Length: 276
Image (cartoon, rainbow, N blue to C red; front, top):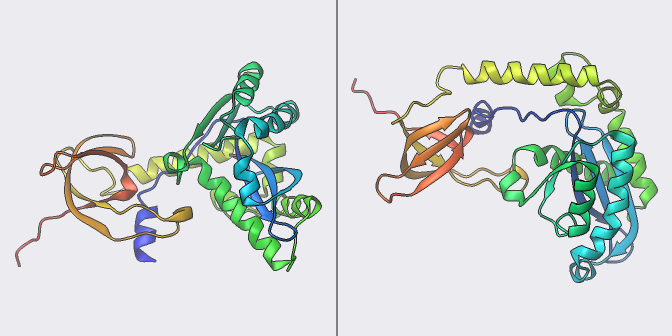
């Protein structure tokens, strides 16, 4: 716990402009060995969820057999409806073939919506981690209901409960009980949330020991595990800080010549031992 808290102390809060939404194609248990697939959208600053159950039950094998182009055609009308109802300006997701189809990209370009569809490794612990956490919460809620199978109506109900229940992160940052629905309906609250995130980042960057000057010797922590929950020990390789921008550092291993880019939370400063 101490190690995890120490890493969180070196992690800046992700900030996105108003109108930024996250999307993922998630699965929940349905009848027999099949899965109920659902497009789940999340407004970044409010954590407000909008589910679009596909009413389609597919096994893993059947899902893999379907091409991204076919699923992309099903995704297009959903995106059009979301933009019309909620004023989406930016859409962020992983590199699922559903989102990478030409039909989806052409639709987003036509609607004037910016989009970032990257591999989960490239977006981990940043924007998409917000949606990953929401998905895990939904699955916990469905598990607690002790449902053997999940219907589209079940998914809509748990999303409604999520949206109308006090959210711990929003409450902590804002300083008063807040729900995703409250922020979704009031952009002034979202702007207040963003300002307080910026203030928190400003204070964190100015904490003693946060900024590592050029030439500092550091260890690089091992990669994170699934859902950013498992953390391994630091690698016993010494890197030297070449430069940094915000909380992102450019490092070089003088022995191997390897150059890497890593966030501040993954760096463990190597301090010289002092003689007694």
